Image (cartoon, rainbow over all chains, first blue to last red; front, side, top):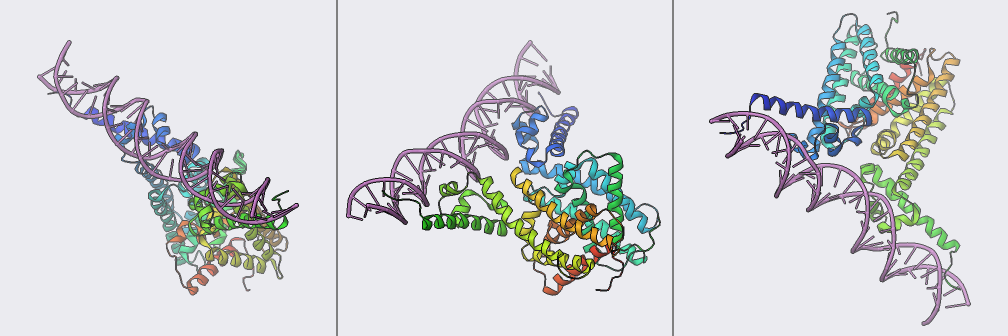
Length: 208
Length: 208
DNA sequence: CAATAAACTGAACTGTCGTTCATTTTATGT
DNA sequence: ACATAAAATGAACGACAGTTCAGTTTATTG
């Protein structure tokens, strides 16, 4: 008998796979999906191009998985923010602020997840993500309407609009002009956006 | 003496150039920038690939010019809408409605102009376009604040947010699920978005 | 119509990138 | 240490799109 797969080798295999995913995520976070070539991903993980295909059948599978992992993590953060304590208004505020701060912190990645086209398979995942964001906001808006904290409105339209506000004002190309803003400026930006959103859903009593 | 350039040939030359621009615009309007290959543009204009290079030095020049022409036209429409008659509130409403209806009517083109990545040169033009939109809205918001029709706010942030709302709710991938909506549904969508925007800038008296 | 220059053509060239696979390296069991 | 299978390598392949250019067609002048 000779070399067989063992626990150790299986673990190592998973490590390599993870290294490839990490490598791709790093490229996306710095330079976007355009920078994700098989050669670049492999090189960044200190591997050869061919090795990638021992772990993923095709580039699109690798991209889809990286996208899914990153977007599920972010969506989970947003979702958990909506389930905190306090009035609907307070939770909407907290959710938007958290979303905004994370978007600022990893602008390139946020842009890649929310807007940058890649291929058909990844686009399916992206729609899932945006739908996920929209659903989370939609539920919150519905709740606010029910408690009469917000004015009557179409929750799904408002939800899409809320995602749009954050996308454009924080992670869209428009916001790329001023890249290294001070903490104060960031706080002002986030609070301006938050207030804009709260007005938009028609929050009645503005105090905290 | 022999063949020389004349008025007629010059005119013909411009016609061919225009045909190439039209051809590219048609491709973008139907299938987006991905469909813009030199061969496709040439074929769609009943020309050979090589001919494109008699009129444009490189693909990027062609793309940039098509983008510029289309985006300037749309921006001009938005800008003129802001300069109509009526209160600032009325003009903001009209501008958003017009923008929205045009976006719905030519969804693919709107998406290509506002979001679809192409290359660095086109991205420069895109930022100009988005900046243009934002400036137009920013001026309107400033005006509304001055007349006390809108609540105090950061005009540039609000302007970016307004562009984001329309982008996401009307031309972003989220809105691609329901493609053939009825006229009634479109009107409801546009009016929901318009009301959302008016609330967002803090319009005081909501009547017309 | 003949001469000539502009306009046009499309096959070939080029570089890039996803993918494959024969070969080499590494890890495991006796 | 040796046999052997898994893992990794990286050169080579194929497809594709931008670009070039030698050859062909078309338009104009005299």
